[in-house]
Each structure stands twice: as structure tokens, then as C-alpha cells.
Length: 142
Ligand SMILES: Cc1cc2nc3c(=O)[nH]c(=O)nc-3n(C[C@H](O)[C@H](O)[C@H](O)COP(=O)(O)O)c2cc1C
Image (cartoon, rainbow, N blue to C red; front, top):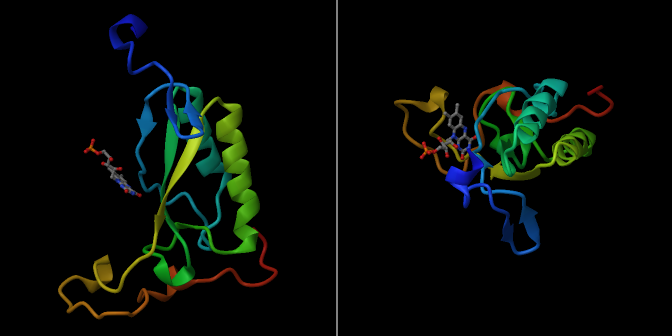
């Protein structure tokens, strides 16, 4: 197969980021996070398998950059120190499997979510459903 897709399987560099091929896993929401936006073993497994399968770079799904910007309850987040070990484990797993990792960073604007359908958009407001806005409670286990 490689012979038929020589360019697809050839290395590619984006500045200092060296990719082993040009296969890109696009960001696709899995809802494999916890309700506090933490990475789970299932999420790590999902990405490790794709890297091991030969994808050059996995773009991780939409990831909230602060609690107010979350869109759904099991959406991943990258805004609390307690979330960082999970992200480190994910990156390590993808690298060990021979891949690279990118991310779709995300902040939800007011409006546009399922619960807002049919309502007027309100500028400047955070997400509406309590469950989506949950910040990591201090001392809560991962
Ligand atoms: C289940 C699902 C979840 C997705 N989640 C995201 C996401 O988190 N962030 C994003 O930018 N795009 C998301 N997308 C869009 C995909 O990344 C997009 O379909 C992909 O880039 C393929 O594009 P194409 O159909 O034009 O080839 C999602 C698509 C699907 C089907």
C-alpha cells in the first residue's frame, strides 16, 4: 500500500514539529473526560491506539480553556492544575506509540449550545447549564 501513497506516508515538518507521515486524526469529541474535565484512561487508550495504528498526529478534541467555556458535562478541560497529570499521561502515551499530539482549544460563547436553541443569543454570558460550568473542587480526587 505504501507505494501507492508515497507522499501520504512520507515525513513532514511543521517548523520544529517532525511528523512521521501526513496522516492527521481530526479533532472529534468523545465525551471521554470526567465531569471535571479530566483525562480518563479510556481517553488515553483511544488516542494511544490511533497513534499506534500509524496516525502521524492526533488532534485532540475541543478542550475548554476555562470552566465557563465548557459545552457539555464530560468535555475535557485544560484550566486546573489537577487536570495536568492526565494531559501529561496522554502526551506520553501518544509519543510512546510513535505519534504526536495537537489540540483544539475551545471557549464556548454565550448561545449556540443545545440548551440555547431557539433563544436569543446573549452577549458575554457564560455557559448556562450548571453541570457544564463545574470547576474542579479543591481536594477532589481525579
Ligand atoms: C463525532 C465528531 C466530533 C467532532 N468533534 C470536533 C471537535 O471537537 N473539534 C473540531 O474542530 N471538529 C470536530 N469535529 C469535526 C471533525 O474534526 C471534522 O469532521 C473533520 O475535520 C473531518 O472533516 P471533513 O469531513 O471535511 O473531512 C467532529 C466531528 C465528528 C464527526
